[in-house]
Length: 107
Image (cartoon, rainbow, N blue to C red; front, side, top):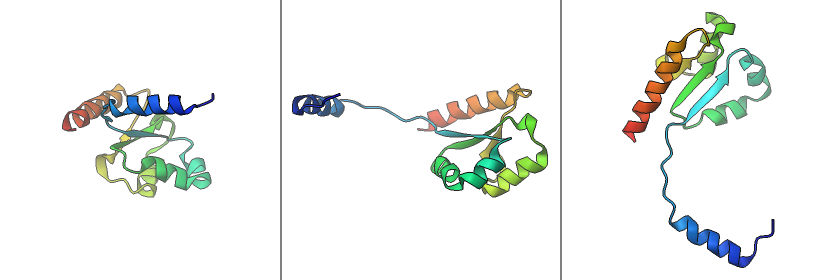
């Protein structure tokens, strides 16, 4: 696409009238592949977690409690800062939805 000066100016005019809110930001981390991803890309994972409202660990039904605790310690997440998601536990999805709604109301 060729951007002319006129197109650039029209785009700038439109942007001045745009207002938006950013809702809660959640980073989703895959439980079973965490160790591999942490070895290969620790800076990427930490960057994705920077300034997020919540971190969710997916597929926790495929890892044991020791691995979950290792992930919690590795990422330096205390208590409820790590939400555990599993296809066998719908309450965790409901909890995530409630937390999103609560965070959205705070802003």
